[in-house]
Amino acid sequence: MSGKCPQCGKPAVEAYKPFCSKRCADVDLARWLREDYRIPTTEPPVPDDDEA
Image 1 (tube, rainbow, N blue to C red):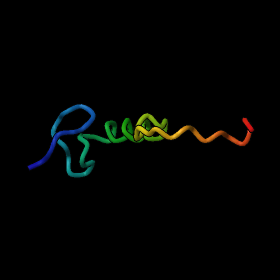
Image 2 (tube, rainbow, N blue to C red):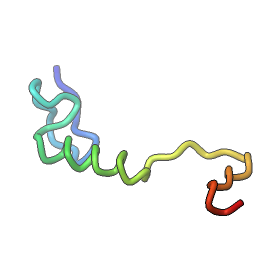
Image 3 (cartoon, rainbow, N blue to C red):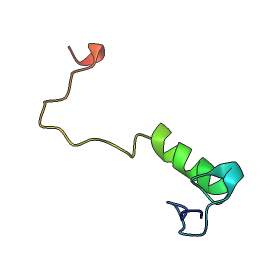
């Protein structure tokens, strides 16, 4: 029994699990690389060296 693709909801394909296709896997990777996925925190941001 296969799960659903987290991007589009289609059935997952074994070769790209948990995704249904390379395209959906690449979309997810792009979101990680753009830092769209973040864990909420209450800590203040760390300043860059250029801002100091």
